[in-house]
Image 1 (cartoon, rainbow, N blue to C red):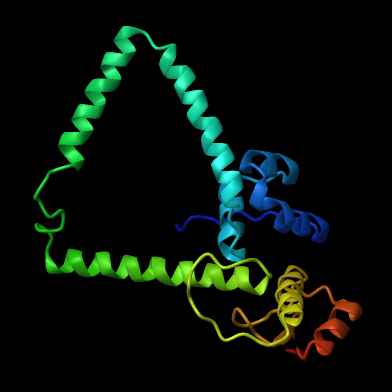
Image 2: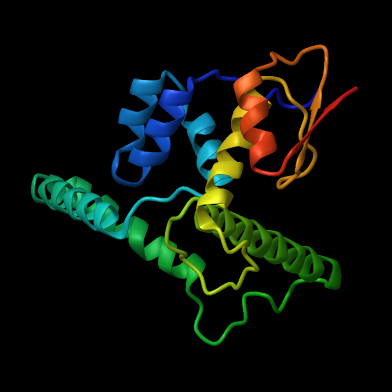
Length: 204
């Protein structure tokens, strides 16, 4: 059996809060506020291209480094020796001067490695495209062909997400057609906004 995807329902207001505060709020605090798990939060961040700001990461890393220094200062001699042995062992395993780490791989293993690299590249490009759609600065140098109206792009992205929450079926990431099914909770205002932005409403 496949792994069951966690389903968490959040309100429109909570979604707006998440998009506005994810970049400078600790994940534990977000999970506590929304009542979600870390795995769900990570999935939402990937889907919407959300990342922490560089300033937030520097502050968090500095705090972690300070805490680590305090912990090291309070170590016993036995703990220090154990840490030194672990460091020496890791150096022998991971750092071998003059040795190509891929030299012993087969053609199939190299092809699989290349496939994973390509997958990571596509995921990163897609995430940065979502950031661009929402008006956030890019973190890569990828080039995208954008609609000249950035505000319309932003409204369409949020509208598609909201309509999917209501049960409308919208094929593709940037689909312009919303299909009404038996599970759809219809909203006249939502459909009017969709038509104003150029979307088509269809009944199945």
